[in-house]
Every structure is written in structure tokens, then in C-alpha cells.
Image (cartoon, rainbow, N blue to C red; front, side, top):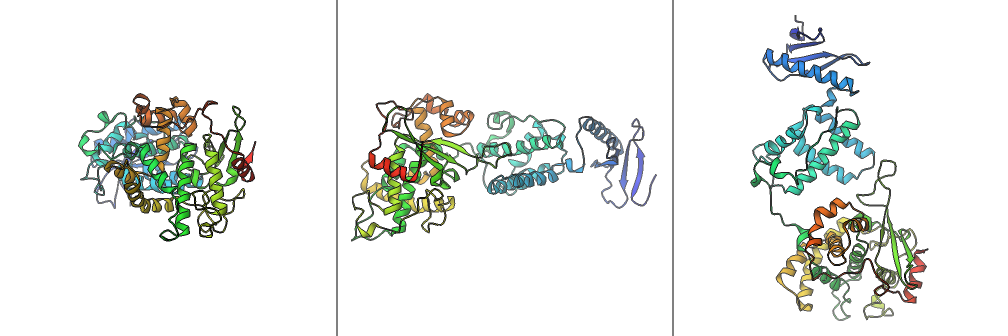
Length: 486
């Protein structure tokens, strides 16, 4: 049986003429294809390449496709040519963009799939992807420099875990959208690396983990430098905008630490209307601040199964820091001995209305952003090291290394570590305070509950009436002019 397009068409025995195999006349490779009659309301045929030149193997593989198609139809799954990996990845990424996920995160995931997963799984059937095929991907492609020619360095196990998380997220989406018959169980590569990675020399097993090398001392060194006075009139080696950027970074670190918040958009996009002054029920003159953040990776558009905001609560010390920052915005630096009345330290006031940013840019039109923060940290590190060499009696080579490794995220890390190690908070309490999962706390910070570092100093996140920080009347009055109060 033949025509101008098909060649050597034959029905597979035992299928009631529902399955046929054939060659394509114009094909040079002469591999077999199969065509299977659909039983759904759409009708038509399901066509697949069998990728073999053997007639016997083609018959066997076509029977497997036939059984797989009938099983999928019974389960209500619409198996089409789009049930393969590549076209569905494109649909999934478009779905992420349409549903309001971060464009930056989606671009990163798109890079991972284009360079890592697509070359291996490109034409693979969704139902054929399981833990075994994922392990083959890891060892035959991702960790094989002969196949993955774009590899610049050995990946860490944390990198593989993050990539695997995105891969599993895509497969779950395929199940929900009925492109895959049933969920797939793939164990965590982080927790099962001995089983899943064949050659551990191909994984960077000892990366420099920034979260493990920074200490409270380096955070204290940054704070002391950032809050230091502006050089005197004779020195004139710091402009007003540079001075403002330094004081703004100081309050930025204080905010991250006191709320145990993430260093990105959760804090950077804050407006004054997002902060609320709350009076303590334990002591009349004690206050804390409630922060409602609508930015950051944990906040999604409402209606898609994620929260549209997160709520953090500060320590009792934070109100005084916030009051000082408002004075800086309004009058310049009147807090370090130079005096408010000194014209050299005055600038045009920054607005502090409900819709104004807590961390404004110098032009007063926008908020400080993450890219600007990253650039500023690069210029800040040598200044902090030089200041520490001349001002600190505790300066060491190790401290210099930690200054180079320090980032705004390190502040959140130190805050979480202090809660566990010095304040004896349970993991569930710390997770609630930091707006993260208990699993995250267990995975990254469990060791600090077992071996607390004696040099860490508690900020009393669960204070008693004996250690509550009290605000003076001037600070309370200043805060109430700007913030909501209960």
C-alpha cells in the first residue's frame, strides 16, 4: 500500500486496523512513523515518529503508543503533538507572564530550560518523563561537559536543586492542564545526591557560601561606618548626595534586621503608608511597627493562589531608628554632632507623605532600586575596610574577607541566626517572623539551634517588661506625624 506521500503503509495486527505504520516517501532517513485512530470527540489521528528503521521495532513501539493513547483518553487527557516537552515549555512560560509572575525570574527560568532541559528532553513525551529520565539527564547531559558544551564551571548542588524545583513546577503545570496523565515523583537531588549523581567530582561540593562566612561583627562594622559623621568642613571629601546614600543604606540595613525581611523589593518599595505604629500592650511607652509589603518574590497578584501582601513586625527598637530617619529626610543630618542649624548639612526636605517612599532616590521621584544597591555595595566595601583599619581595634584579615562577602541579604541571615541561637526561638516562630517556611529554616539554619555561637547578641525579639525599648515623647510625636497609629 503506497501513495505519493506515504510508503509501505501497513496495519499493525491485533489493533482492529486502528494502528498503522508507514514510511514517508520523501524522507532520506527512512524511519518509521505510526498513525493511530483517536476515540475522543475530536476524532482524527494521532501521529508519532517511531525513530527506528526496523519494521519489527516499529510495530512494537506503535503498540506502546496505542496503549498509552487509550489510557490517556480514558483519563480525560488530550494527547496531541503538543504533549511533547518543547512546545509545552513555551506555553508554560507564557502562562507565567500572563499570571503576573516576576519577569526577571521568568527570564532566568527560560534560560535554564533553553540551555539545560530542552536539549535533552526536547521531543520527549510528557508521560515518559520520570525520575529515571531525570537522573539520566543529570549525568548524561547536565554534568557531562562533552554534551553540555556551554558549561562555564561545575554547578553546585544548590544550583541543581533550584533547577530541579523549576523543572518539577513545569511538570505539575502539565498535569493540571491535562497534558500529562498523572503526577511524577522525583526525589530532591539535594537530599538524595548519593543516589542520583554518578560522579560527584562533577559537582562543586565546596562553594564559598556567603551565608556561612559573615558574622555579627561585620554587620556591626558596616553599621558603625554608615552612621559615622560626615567629614568636617576642611575635608570636603563627601558630597551631600554621597552622605545621603550612606545614611539611607544604614537605615536600610536596620529595617531588614528589625523586620527580618528580605533585602529586595519587600523593603525597597516601601511607602510610609505601609508602616503603622503600634503601642505595646505590655508597657505604656513602648511601640513597635507593623510593615505591610506589597513587593517581592513572595507577593503575587491576587487571584492566582498567592498572597497580595506580607506583614512583618519590628522589634521595639525600630521606632527610634525610624524617627531618626524621618529627621534626616526632613532636615539633613542633625544626629551626629554637626547640628541641624549648620547650613552645610541641610538639604531640600524629602517628602514624607503616605505615598512617598521610605527609601527615596536622590531625585525624590523614585525609590532606591536593587541594581543601584548592588552598585553601591561594590563602592562601599573598600571604604568600610579602610575605615575599619583606622577606627576598629578588632580589625583582622578575616573581617576584611567578610566585608567583601557581605551583602544586604546577609543582614536577614544574621537576624534569623540571632533569633535561633541567642533568643532560643522555635523554628516555627522564626519562620512566622521571617515570612518563610519551616522547611527553609530547618534546611539552612538548623545548625545554629544545635551549636549557637556565643558571640552573637540578642535583640530580644520576645521581650519582657524589663528589656522593652521605650521611646521618648519627641520621637513618638515625630512618628505620629507621619505614620498611622492604632
